[in-house]
Amino acid sequence: MTTATTKHTRPGARERISALCDEFTEIGAARSDIGANQSGVITGFGSIGGADVAVYAQDFSYRGGTVGQVEADKICDLLDHAMALRMPVIAILDSGGARIQEGVNALAGYGRIFRRTVAASGVIPQITIIAGPTAGGAVYCPALTDLIIMVKEEATMFVTGPTVVKAVTGEDIDTQDLGGSTVHAQVSGVADYEAIDEADAFDYVRSVLAYLPHSVGEDTPRYFFDNGASSSPGVAVDLRQLVPADTSKAYDIVPLITTLVDYGELVQVKPDFARNIVCGFACFDGRPVGIIANQPAVGAGCLDIDASEKAARFLRMCDSFGLPIVSLVDVPGYLPGSDQEHAGIIRRGAKLLAAYADATVPLITIIVRKSYGGAFIVMGSKSMGADFAYSWADAEIAVMGAAGAVDIIHRREITADPARRQELVDAYTRDVVTPAAALASGELDGIIEPADTRATIVRALQISASKRAAAVTTARAHANLPL
Image (cartoon, rainbow, N blue to C red; front, top):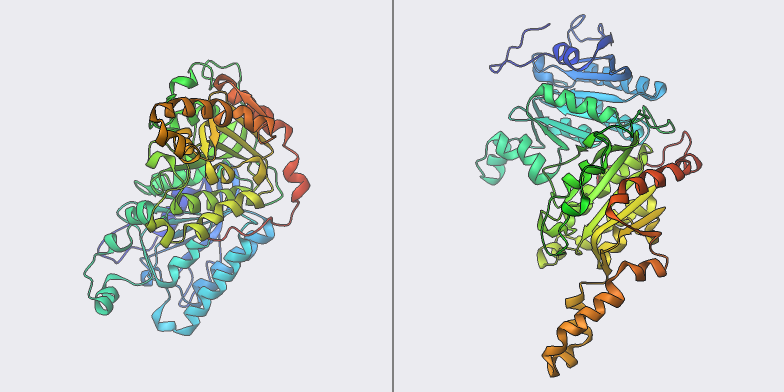
């Protein structure tokens, strides 16, 4: 292994690959500009948990991990192999970007990598680990992949670095504040997971791969689940205790999810970004699914720009690789305000609409406590293509909450006799907000008790299991481009 020459010593490419993979076979070792094993990237095929993957890792100790023609050739060759063999691609990046000394040839090399990455999108899973600095062209390749993992306090991503920023704008900012892992995990949403260290990053990759097929058209993994186990979800916990009856009261929906899914295991995607919605991988009766759930503990679970784009991107990834979507709904509507309107909530919020409407996988929706207005439509409603939609018996479904609706509909009556307001609210709740109205109109398939939620989801997944096979074979459903 080449000894790092930078001031800050960090693992080399082969050391990182060894930590990630159970075994590894290198290819292209002799393709170098000065000699065998001397290039800024190591490429080859590895095994992770018994699954074959294509892996490439940049090495900052060699010319700053920059990409020249040789490095681009090696990466492109690996991507071509991965597409031909239909296997996931894992990239470990630690790069200064395009090699300045090679000029336009280095830039063209990135262009060739970008084109192959886009061609592979939606065909094979592509996961990027940012283990050090990435700048310039180096940041766009990970942006085109399905998931980005950044190592805390080590990884950075920016198009232009602090020096250029200061020269052009006068802003004085350090690398972490400009494009560090925390910034991208919490503020920009570029990172899907902020790992505490490289070992955590590799564990996250292993966890995600356990839910995904090797390529489009392949069946998702299936796992044994012992329904008779004492740890079976949805049995020991009264779900009503997890969800307050008062629709205005905040609560954390994650414990509800972990109570419902197999072994309480939920692998979240973008857990620190747009926290008013929860997205992640889980299993029901051994079947991997994608979970999308409103989070009443943050911003009342309202949909906004960031939540819409986060959920749309996650849904598209799941749809690309055949994972059913289970939507757990508790949403008061869209976040109001000029900030949202001016930032394009109409245009950007529509991405979630399009993602649900385009989906080819089974869609199962459970309304837990409330679903109001346009958010009711967007969050996996029957009108948007849900295969099965259910509601808890005491949930509220309407254009808006009863109090707000009554104040509009009966404004004159209330003005004349304020004492009648509560009577009118109670009547509206009984006649309109109840899920019975949605059931009668065909917008629900059933009204269930909380205790039956898991069994209802499991059965719905069993019935709709063949839906994907009828829609997609070996051709990709669509690319999973950034949203």
